[in-house]
Length: 184
Image (cartoon, rainbow, N blue to C red; front, side):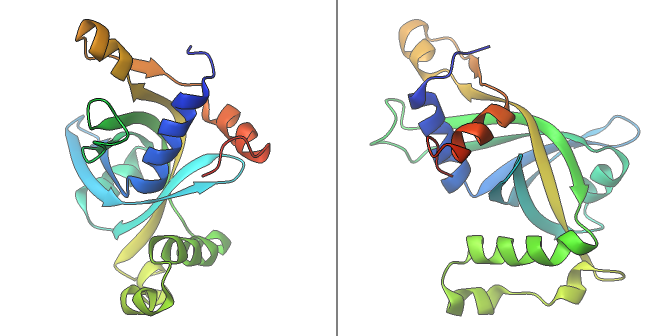
């Protein structure tokens, strides 16, 4: 387990806050793997979650319905001024579920406000609530991150080895956020 270094947490915050897209890896009951990219927003409360919506009949949505364990990757290649490699990435694993019931409206509102801060733009993209309930074609999903790893940029620069840094558990990062040491 990596020790808790502020620069690592700053990199993680940047990726979570600005990555916008996560590539999910899900699996079918047969074991067949599937990757899909979704537009997420981070949701930090008592846990670290990624929130997005997808068509409920999309392959990754059907896979999540049958198998809640997923993995994912958030990667940016436009960090020329922030990273000596010009890129950075975080890999993660966690459990995912469709958001229903009382949680739905608060997650829907949070997603749209976070993804589209400008009210005029938000109204253009805002889908009605019935799209996400009952017979509606879409669902919101919440991925609760259980483990994560950052690209080992220093290791690459020193040894040219493609490795990852094991990060502190998300619950530790939430504790830091509550202490205002880590802003997301």
